[in-house]
Image 1 (tube, rainbow, N blue to C red):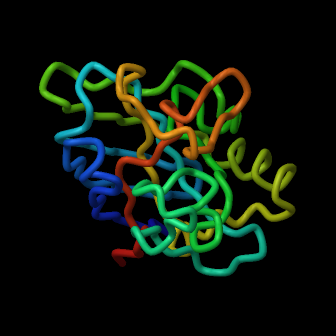
Image 2 (cartoon, rainbow, N blue to C red):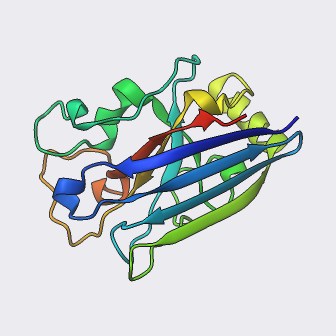
Length: 186
């Protein structure tokens, strides 16, 4: 059985960033494979963009963050502020999603126009096995997840209140620039 999902990706933090990052994500799940296709426009140019789906391990439906989640009122919704409505980072859309190795440099980089396209086939059983190891279930429940696109240039001066460092990566890498709710198509 083939399951198809789509997310319309809308801007987040665009007033501060100065671009309205937007695009679409498509997921096609078959018995053996998860095909992922994401295309983004108007992202910060020449910048690597982390991208993931986020959610709640207990199966609660995640929602996208809005400026309402700016709990410290600094004008930006940072990664920790998304967690109340979106849950935790789950699966990265990098060169090997099935490894679920979030902090790395193998994510898409936008071109001089702020565009990037990402497309990959992921061995579904490998991803489900790792997902179960980390979250206790092998059901990805894509229709209960949200997608986030992250990343602004290091030259953008962020308020000191912006949190979200992951390992050696600071808030420039993890600041959300766009988000979308994943919905089942068929």
